[in-house]
Length: 236
Image (cartoon, rainbow, N blue to C red; front, side, top):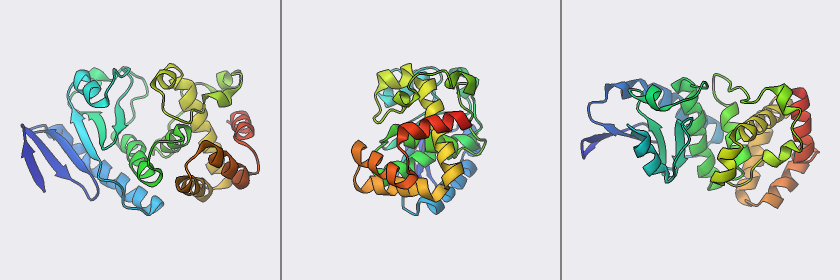
């Protein structure tokens, strides 16, 4: 199923569309990973996701234009409904300046997780849960950007669990945010089970407010989020 427009091509998987420049042969390596990830999350979430478009770009300028702001040079993917913006494999290494350069299998395990989460909840909120869960589910097991020794020295680490996406705070404290979010979700899943965190997400989706989330978290885990953060860091 192909649609040609402005020297670009759109190819469809079961749930999503991939839009890229005609003649970019490097795209072929992506489709198997996309199909595996969408199959995996359809089985987990048991919902039909929104029809996201995976928009392949060829420069940081093009990436930023679609994202709507100037992105840091470590940003390799960004979800802005209805798009996942990402670099073509043919030029990725030129524009991504980070040591945490994950393989495409892991990349799509993370980003397509967001597609299903956003479909269920309606948005990213709480961003610590959506990002923490997507990071945990990466097949190559994403490591905490901050070493656990440094994490244990942070004062009030729970303050880095952002509820809403605010670009200023998000990128200023990106390493703290991703580290705490990942470690907390990892602790919850590995100590209380995968189904329980999915239950938290489903309950939150029916009444998406910060107060309701905290109330349901207490019910499910018999502790508040602050206590869970402290315990997750100690056990990391």
